[in-house]
Image (cartoon, rainbow, N blue to C red; front, side):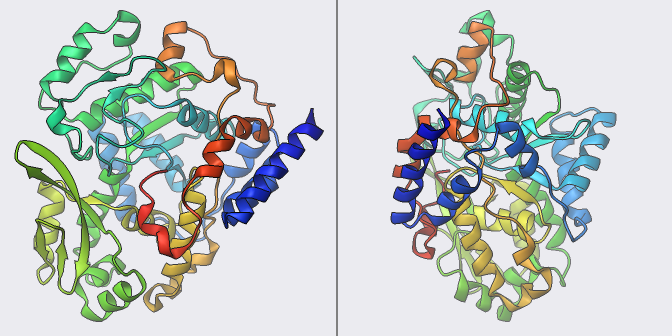
Amino acid sequence: MQITLRRKIQDIEKTLKKAKKVRLAGCIEKNWNKTALKYSEELNFWRPKRPIEKELLNAFDKELRRLETGNALRIEILKSINKRRVLQTAPHLGATESPRMLCINWLGSLGVPEKEFYVVGMFSGIPFSNHSRPGRINKKVGTINLFPSNMQDGLVYRSIIPKKLIEVENSLPIKISRFLPKAEEGRSYTKWALLACQHIERKILKKNNLIYLDINEVVTEYLIQVLQNKNHVFYKIFFDPKTRKEFTRIFRNEIVFYTPTKKGKYEQMENMFIKKNTLKSKTKEINLENPEDLIKELKDGRLCPSLATSFLALAFLNQFKCFGSFAQVEYLPVYQKKFAKLKFLKEYNLEQVPTANLTTGVFPEKTNLFPIDIIELGKFIQKSNILFGELLLPMKNVLLESYFTGSERNTTKRNKK
């Protein structure tokens, strides 16, 4: 069996290398023959060299409070975040996930030490039309849409619960609805979705140490704090002309924020770029001459940090080991290489941060189910001694067809994880 698996994995590696997906190929080559438990234990081992910024820890605290985490539990989670500095960043934010994302969370959480927490930083900087279907109850057959048509291209970040979601929730079978929080029209959709996803996957994986939060909310609160400090890296990127010029020279046409916009009755999202002394999208402009303007947008609006902005805060300034799927293990090292070219970041020793931390896979066919399907069936069994390579074979075509090669030329396509 292992000889056959080895041959099939080597074929995948060879094809990936030929397609210049060398980091993904390297991750698979190094780890395919390890058990899921052993691989997860290795992934979860990390000793950061720099202390976490108090502003970032405060931002995690605020997000946990938004999610109404109890005081005693919140303190324990923050201690774990401070100590471990490990974060799962593969999933997009939605109420229910795909079979692959469930497998990712199973794999990533296996090796978490006892009494520590597996923290999932779900990414809300996507439209509801994203391939992960963040505004639906995802099932193998007959997915259930929670949002009206005029919101389908809208931004998930800071979205609110529409009337349609209430109606759908009230019509769901009790086997599903009992796992969902009671929705209230006009309240935070991301809070509702995070609590739903957390409750469902804790039940399936039989683990109460799974913590789901909106990583864009965390980074937003962090930016609100650090942009009040003239000596901070982010303040200099946005408000110091010399630093901003160096940043935009290396990161040409880099998306730094997402923002919602309206086209008639339809909500859409736009990308924002640094253009001279402004942040600019097709329909919006923020002057960068006054820090308070940007801070106000972050506080009161729906200005959502992009991937580059988020990973600079998390991985490179605060040394979080960020787990990711097949695209992230290619693009995050590219970010690392580009950030390392910036003189004003030399003191951070960016090369120390591990950036190719592959968590992906699909359970074997009979257990390859959506979380909601598993909830309805009432059972989930998967042994931790399965080889990592066995989880990769069922998604061979996905790995080979993934568009990202790690080239700096296609880093603008990375919203698809």
